[in-house]
Length: 173
Image (cartoon, helix red, strand yellow):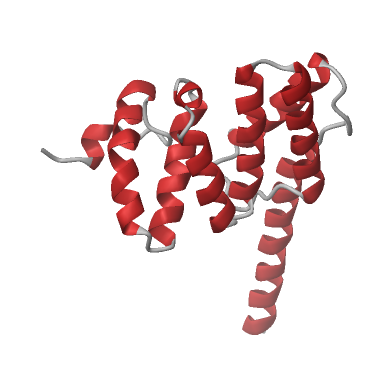
């Protein structure tokens, strides 16, 4: 009898977790499939900004269709957009790879983004540095990690912490 109750309880927990997970994904659906003008770019940008707000949701994964849309956004931005729009479009592609834990792409694209001085002026740079730092730690690339840490800590001072942890709480002098 107890094993039946355990199974039933586990099923109920799994069911409710599945519902809450699918609701968070459903709320992030996007209706457009092509980027043909600035309004389309803005709609895609709003979608990816909402994705960025999901950064604490470890279960959230973007789909390949989101990558394709981000790539279309980049194509439009290169042809018609400003430098900032081009950088944001590259950042949206970075968010796709980050949500799917693709360490190679996170490191490659993160390094590319932080090597652009204009990108470092954007508030998106702190999350990029945070993800790059975490990927370098997970892949044991400590020499490279040591190279970006000063920039990461400077950005924490400028933009604040990614998850609300202050620099003083991480570094004890």
